[in-house]
Figure 1: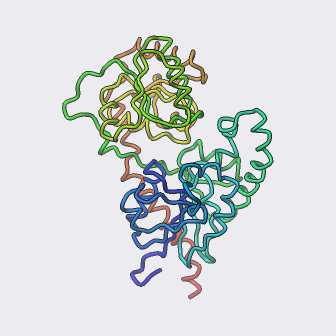
Figure 2: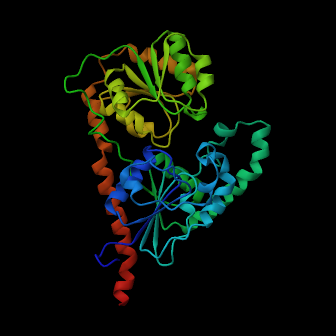
Figure 3: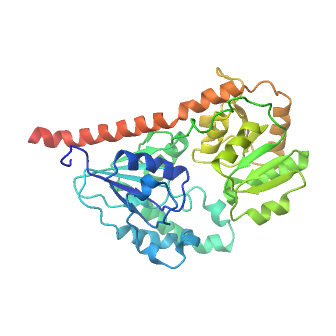
Length: 383
């Protein structure tokens, strides 16, 4: 503890190149402990919130490579060496926010290391086919990926306690690392994402909000809406943009990225949000429900923990399609349109509130301080 009886804290994040869901999880502790030390592989200045920027993140040698922010994901084989170059100062608590390499940080002797795990390294484990396919490239990469899996599994031993962002990720942590974990769902800004003060009738377009990565399976939403002739508004950009535009018909409209306020307005007006990928948690469906929108999602991954399907004890907030095909999604859209009055905006909002920011902050801080007190109790008794 420092002179003010606050824990000496080190925070670790994979990389800081934008203010996405993972950075919002980190931001909470940057506000709580503004004197913490922050380590990351690379940092694009000005890309994250002032609360994070004020900690002046310490980076790795990767950050010094010219134009690295355009290609850093291809440097995966170099990341173990980059992590090994970090030298955290003596501290009481290390908290890593990790979906790739951050959890491999070597904690100073005597410190507690809690990893808030977004997922075990998806490129090397459960989604490698989605990233690399099954062709020659995938076979050539397999040796590299196997070494990364061994490194990833080995460095899990440096984590004192794992936190998982969902039950889906909790199962992956057990499968990949043979470790138990506690689930604390990420924060959703349900104060910002909310219904309009004077809600208007919902319009007839479906909505997708996502990065254009292949594993997001936006092709299913584009193809299903094209086949049914349904209007689809797509917010996002990314590596799959050209292919998606080729698939699209006249009813599909690409808007690029939009501001949070513009996305909120679309969520308030859309017929339903479409969520065709398998995600670790999936903040976007919860944001849509916070605005009163129903969700039509693939029935695997984090969405099954946040969206309520018909037939249960609670009012439904959406539908699932169980096969990841355009035909199955199209069938779900048709089924949804046959029961327009079954999905209440109030029920969607009520469900989203279970995932609000205050709940995340309270649960995370209580876990960290409880873990720290437990770890320090033997030394206090010895004194």
